[in-house]
Length: 115
Picture 1 (tube, helix red, strand yellow):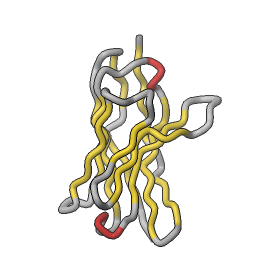
Picture 2 (cartoon, rainbow, N blue to C red; picture 1 turned 30 degrees about the horizontal axis):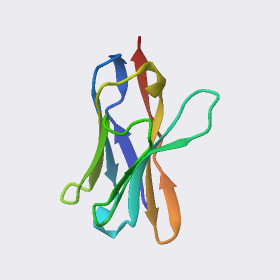
Picture 3 (cartoon, rainbow, N blue to C red; picture 1 turned 135 degrees about the horizontal axis):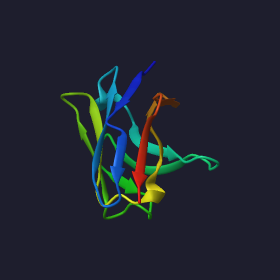
C-alpha cells in the first residue's frame, strides 16, 4: 500500500510559478515510477510528467520547457516545478505512483491560473 499526499496548489496569475510536492508513505526508491497527472473540468485525466526510479523523465508536450519534475529519495517526495503558467494549466493535479504492478493516486490539489 502507498499513500500519497499532495501540497502546493493555489491561485496564480498567468506567467507565474507554483511548486507542487507529493509526499509518499514509503521509500520512493522502491516505487517503479512516480508522476503528476491533471484533470480539468469536463476533460479526462492526462499525464503531465513522470519520473522513474532511475531518474528518467517524461513530459507532456504541452508542458515541456515550462515544468520540471524532480525527486528527493531522502525525503520521499516528488516535486513539480511549474513556470510560465497558462490559464489552460488550470486543473486538479494528482500525484501518481506505480508499485508492485498497482497504481496509486493522491487526493489531488487544485491549481488555478488566472488570465
